[in-house]
Amino acid sequence: MKHDLLIIGAGPGGYIAAIRAAQLGLNVACVEKEPRLGGTCLRVGCIPSKALLESSEKYLETQHALAAHGIKISGAELDLPTMQARKDGVVKSLTDGVAFLFKKNKITRYEGNASFVSKNTVQVGDQIIEAERIIIATGSKAAQLRGIEFDFDRVGTSTEALSYPEVPEHLVIIGAGYIGLEIGSVWKRLGSKVTVLEFLPIILPGMDGEIRDEAFKMLKKQGLEFRLGTKVTGARATEKGAIVEIEGSEPIECDRVLVAAGRLPNTDGLNLAAAGLATDEKGRISVDAHYRTQVENIYAIGDVIAGPMLAHKAEEEGVACVEGIVTGYGHVNYDAIPAVAYTDPEIAGVGKTEEQLKEAGIEYKKGTFPFIANGRAKAIAQTQGKVKILADARTDRILGVHIIGPRAGDLIAEAVAAIEFGATAEDLRRTSHAHPTLAECLKEAAFAVEGAALSM
Ligand code: NAI
Image (cartoon, rainbow, N blue to C red; front, top):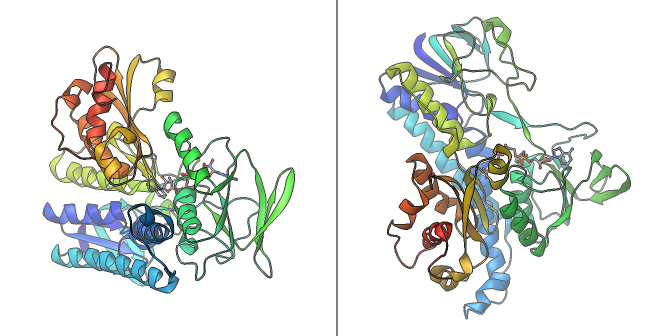
């Protein structure tokens, strides 16, 4: 069977690319090894973690927060199987949704591992599939660390940590990045003692320093235990639980270990050499600005190429790649890709951090506004955190926006649009914001860039 376009991988990069290509009139096929479409994000990543974050937050509210609203609760109990079943239901409905969209857009679906036979042909099981163009969108897998003996039960990755059958008494997490902090928050709220071991002296490397420092204080206050500057030398399952070995310190005995120390591009079994392709020193596939690999008809997008490993970055690349193929034009603005950690409160950022501006020698103005001075934040009793806007000192153009606070992940969308449209801080402060909303904090921070917020 010959297709115009074959996409390998049905994660957010691959399935979005497939749908867009079908909309633009191509005969499209997609190979996915898992029975469910949607990739890591929908099956074992973004979506199930957000479902558990929401449920665990509700549980925590019944323990403490609702009393302040004048709601007395007694006898609230955790029913973990129901919580997990709800999460599984959310995943099912979304992965079914992708299958529906494939049918609706007449995308041919192949199930199995794809392996290149030549630059235009791929083998899946005993089927040979031919396509004029191929997009590799195979995503990433959890990085393995030296000395860690995974049994994918007691010592595992985020996939296992999203489905623990009981609340671990003591969970040790290796890595204080997105996965470590989000999943650590879930199990802490449900009652685990959580110890996060981080190699660097900071958490969330890459985020704006001021926001990161606030996050660190808040998460510590919530009871997450951090050991920064800690080098893990080994971890393995024991009869009763697991043990983690640390350089220069006593080993830690615990119930479960989550290894969340980054992810690596996934090119396992693709047989890239048969297509004339190779990976770089980090295992990634090199592409040009149009996502073309060194083989003219083969493209790559998402976690398998350079850049942040984020679902929405892969989606943007999927659309730009396909539009580039069909219309000759497709583009991703990497200065306007937001990053969000769904902790409580959420942490979100877009554009340059203060550290990056300093390093680049760019003169900037800064405006911040705390949620405690916002009416809506007070009304919903979520007053922690702040909005920070960084604007060019000369042109006033917004260069970076960083938020820690309630619904930061939603609020950042306005900042992304502002950066995308090249807005100045003045544009933002002159834009009407509904009252009372959390988004008013952005407007106030924009006023602060010019000198002073109105409500401070
Ligand atoms: P990450 O890169 O965010 O964080 C990994 C952390 O582990 C870093 O702080 C690193 O210094 C630390 N580390 C590395 N080796 C270590 C060692 N031997 N001992 C102790 N610490 C060590 O990676 P993470 O959290 O695993 O997430 C993987 C990818 O998935 C990331 O690229 C992230 O962007 C993405 N992701 C995004 C989410 C979101 O957008 N909300 C949620 C979850 C994951």
